[in-house]
Length: 123
Image (cartoon, rainbow, N blue to C red):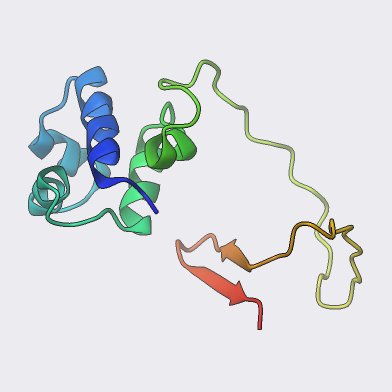
């Protein structure tokens, strides 16, 4: 669970670093100004879409830092786009992944290029 107070403080740090008002910040990431106001006041919690808009617009913001405070801001190094892996048909490929007896998979999130995602729960 994201601590809303800490999240808001990190969001304010990003706005201060980039010298943006809440209104300018909202315009820059493409959300309504009221959305920023509601998040900053603690009325609403940030959605996944909101977090992705922040991290996609401001490449110096690490998602894990924004959500959990782990890591650094601004990112020290810009990460180059990784070389794409060869495309494979995963529907027929069997993949063996060693799983520790101590750790069990609870859920898997898949993020698609159109901004949507799917969640697969253990069941």
